[in-house]
Amino acid sequence: MQKRNPGAQAAGADGAVRLSKRMSELGLASRREADALIERGWVMVDGVPAVLGQKVAPGQKITLAAQAKKSQGARVTVLLNKPVGYVSGQAEDGYKPAKTLITPQNHWEGDKSPLHWSPAQLKSLVPAGRLDIDSVGLLVLTQDGRVAKSIIGETGTMQKEYIVRVADARTGGLPAFTDEVLALLRHGMSLDGRKLLPAQVEPMNESELRFILQEGRKRQIRRMCAMAGFTVLRLKRVRVGRVRLGALPVGKWRYLAPGEAF
Image (cartoon, rainbow, N blue to C red; front, top):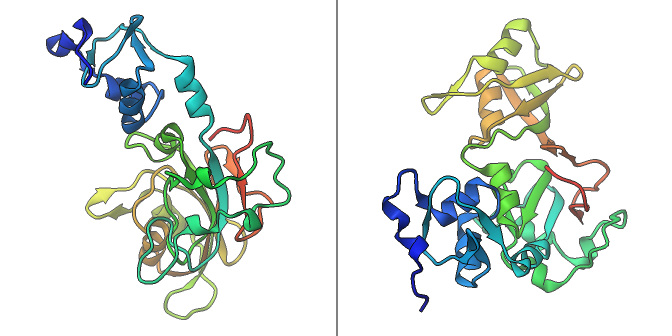
């Protein structure tokens, strides 16, 4: 069992917060990962090895040992073009999770990453955000808590872009993209008693809309379209932050490329 060092006694200092929380705020690691790094002795506060439960005050310097950076660098992030019929997370109602598609056979031939697949990459590989079972397109799965936090963190406003084909909910025919309907979709809706953030919504053709959102409520676009009088026929996510789906085929996956960031 680790012994506390003097820095751990700063719990009562003004502005002091738990070290793992501060590391998460700084983007150094997720809270869970931070605790694991601290436990291994790979985190320093003002040059002194940190301990679990330690609190830090504003201005204290937090650094990671070389081993920690190497460990984080070995974690993979993959991009999957999720097909219909797969759930993003845990298996449910007999449907398989999207993670089961991350196999050597489904690795996209056009992937130019220097990484090679190994079974170890499936360990702790989790979706950063979700696409419902009827939706397709870009799904991010990662072993890196920093990536997950940047995409789905509570304070995050990372853009996600979707192409949505809709029909008139009453007739099943072509929808009417009137100025009033577009204004409603862009900044006039609430879900579950909370007002939605402004959305960018533009017609692409007579039956498709481009949505750019900065939040991800459950089945948000489908519910927005229903309130606007539309039925969603197809929903495809094509971008998360600065990363695009591009030419990745349905059911195939690739690694996040070196230098590519959300």
